[in-house]
Amino acid sequence: MKEYLTGAGLAFESVNVREKPLALTDLQRLGARSVPVVSHGDRFVYAQSLDDVARFLGLLALPAPLPPAITLPRIARFLEIAQLEAAALPTTLLELRWPGREDRAVADLAWHVPMIAEATLCALQGGLLDYAWFERQPAGDQRSPGPIAAQAKLTAQGWAALAMGNTEKLPATLNTYYGEQPLAAVLERTAWHMAQHLRQLQGWLHEQGHEPVAPLQPEDTADLPMPQGL
Image (cartoon, rainbow, N blue to C red; front, side, top):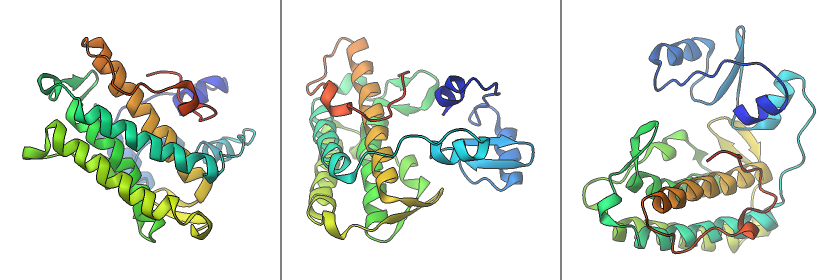
């Protein structure tokens, strides 16, 4: 979202609510229940959808999202990569913290990737794509390569059974914590969200001298609206 605003030539103030708790109170006063948010005066818009941000700011509409026929198998591919990377995680790095995100260790990031798909699966089954899915972390014995890989495998099986096997029966819109959204937009966001965190995980491992076992390829992220920054 910040890259989008910068590219549009707009001046803005970026506020990290993890560092400034009162900022979250200000957003809640406006009626916002989660971040990211773009606010102006007493108005705000959830920024999960850049289309919504564009409308809020009076900017040109963004290109249409990739069709489900492209994003559905991409998500399956990212779950496969997540499983392979989790299984090969060095145990000595599991509790290494991401700079600027001291609440998220390598184990948490590896767990987070399949949770993104789980959230979308929940919505595909008629439930809510709830922000709480993104805050889940492995606990106790789950914080090791085997259980994290097993979760990615379990999610992949669920994805194959529901999303991949019934493409023609998928709903036109999904219920999310940022409102009712078109299926294609949610699937595209799910795909690039997972890919971005896999980029981070693999980059993190590389910095520590461990090469990824299933590196993302250019075709994996082709045409996805990926952030430029890691």
